[in-house]
Amino acid sequence: MTEWMGISGMKLNRVGYLIREGFRSIFTHGFMSFASVTIIMACLIIMGSVSLLSLNIDALIKDLENQNEVVAYVDEKINDDAQIRAIGDAIRTIGNVQSAEFVSRGEAMDKFMSNYDSDLMEGIDETVFRHRYVIHLTDISLMAQTKAQLEAVDGISEAKAHTQYAKAFVSIRNVVTVVSLVLIVILVFVSIFIMTNTIKLATFSRREEIAIMKMVGATNSFIRMPFVIEGLVLGILGGGLGYLAEWGIYDGLTVKVVGSMAGSFLNIIPFTSVALFVFIIFIGLGILVGVFGALNAIRNYLKV
Amino acid sequence: MVQLNNVRMVYSSSGTEALNGVSFKVDDGEFVFLVGPSGSGKTTIMKLITGEVNATSGRIIVNDFDMRRIKRRKLPQMRRTLGVIFQDFRLIENMTVYDNVAFAMRVVGASNRQIRKRVPYVLELVGLEGREKRFPNELSGGEQQRVAIARALVNNPRMIVADEPTGNLDPVRSLELMLLFEKINSMGTTIMVVTHEKELVNAFAKRVISIDNGVVIGDGMDGYFGNEA
Ligand SMILES: Nc1ncnc2c1ncn2[C@@H]1O[C@H](COP(=O)(O)OP(=O)(O)O)[C@@H](O)[C@H]1O
Ligand SMILES: [Mg+2]
Image (cartoon, rainbow over all chains, first blue to last red; front, side, top):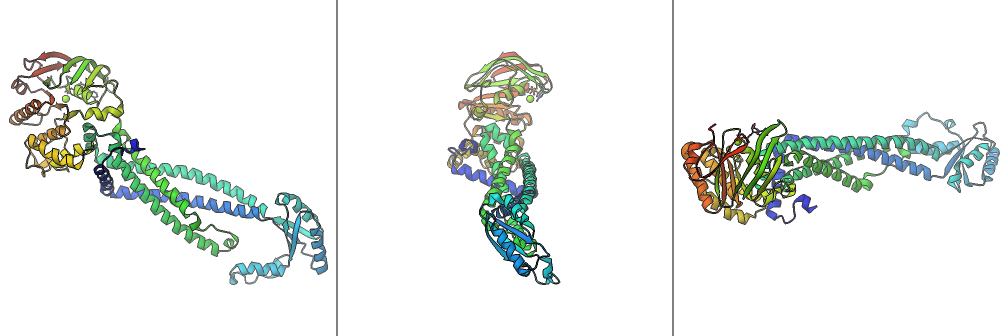
């Protein structure tokens, strides 16, 4: 580390000099610096958003998988209380059923309505809903078997388990994960490419200084330092600004999603609970891109 | 101290054979001229000494460093024993005279205190006192070359190598510059000056190594032998 940074035995004077040089260069190439910070920001935001989406789907899947609830719908033709009670008794004789609670179509509608804007739901009447039993299982692993048994009960038209929804989300999650990994790789390369060219500009405008440094015997790590610092500063700037933007975008979007229909039964991860993680990843990638870009840019100058 | 032993140099890019078996030795404290027509291989010798290019074959020793075996990591250490001067001065245009010289110290890790002490001393030595705050383009060619010499001297090298240092100067300035090199040599620094200016060389009774077509055709105290370019 110290060998690479060239800091071993370095006097404060030199550190100050190197940092000054690093910053000076950023302002000399204001436009390219701005461009590379913006590109890093954009790349991080795309990466971050896709990753956060994938994280949310993951949480949703876990949520669904952990619910040992099965809803058994009563045949629509059956409205007789006694008959319904008999169905309930039949359900409770199934071994894996821990509890079965009856929910009438009226109650189901009320619950549904309470979740949404009432004006959106105008004109919906309770016949849209079915009577149902909400059943909790003793052992989730026997879900499929129990579901079949429930569907075999006379008067039950179908049984739905959350795990079925979970399965659908797993395939969505897999697609999102692959897409985000490919995106991350591409975007990291794009960022490094832009960063390399930004810093190449800096090395080009200072090629005479570099030549003189080499001539008088400055070490390669010393020659690299101002450019690495420039890359670091740009990378951290891009990472930090990207983080703030991601925060804003995520919060903005979640407010919209939660307010919408689908959002009401989604449990969206609040940004604050992943903030530190996102921050570390963004700054880390910013640093990575900055340092790699700088080392890449200066490489040709240090061959001899 | 510089020693070349049967050095061959073929530039792989063009296939040009620039040196074909060059041998000579320059001891510590010497003052030598390296002369020869244009294209004879003088700059190639300089580049081999500074480690800018590697010889195709043969052995080169520079201030106790074996250039054939030297690790890239050690090159800076080797270069700190040399002060290099070029025909075109190679000053940093947006730095003052003082900063151009201080820069060379700063980048090899000198402290501010050392810099404040050493830079005025070498500027005075090369006759540039009072010019510290000027920029290179505010100086004459002779003065610019003095800045380059001050920069080459400031880290106290064992040897100065100068490639056609008078190439851009008029005869009077050229002579003054050689006198300055002589003064520096008298203080103990080894000097090797590349030139093809016959009059200048013959004005000094110094050792002259003549090369032509990549081979040494003369080495002694008898002045300029080479064909004039
Ligand atoms: N970088 C290079 N690539 C290919 N050929 C070169 C290079 N530098 C010099 N040469 C050739 O090597 C020969 C010697 O050149 P040089 O050492 O520069 O001579 P001098 O300094 O005496 O004028 C010339 O023929 C020149 O064309
Ligand atoms: Mg030459």
